[in-house]
Length: 170
Image (cartoon, rainbow, N blue to C red; front, side, top):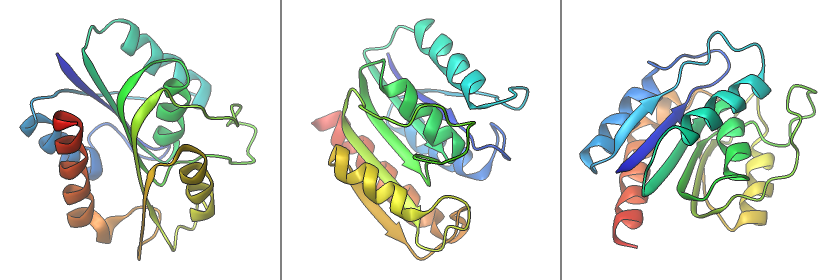
């Protein structure tokens, strides 16, 4: 089974626009999809535990984690412990000084990593994605947008479609 697990951001939910858009693409590529609901979690550590429990309870030959903002952080932290087929991140909250983000070192067990981040992100500095991209040799896309990436949906769809195509044929 091919599985894609989506992790939403701090102020969002499992049925947010980005997840809806990307979920359709994952399903088109034959992935079973799960959008975790973190709305009752008090912090990023609880979210990470929830994601890891979900991974433990699923048997998949191909696992892709997709995360936005805090969900990007959660997905990346989980990728330190689990071998992934792919890690797709949207404005991931990496290297944030807030004590909520306890893990500050990322060593993803993953060969396919792609990031989309807005140049005008007012919440998570795009420089954090540049740093992570440099350290992991990820594909990094910087776009003329803010943290919500609302003007980049079409670009996001295209990049995620290409990302999954490369994974399926790579």
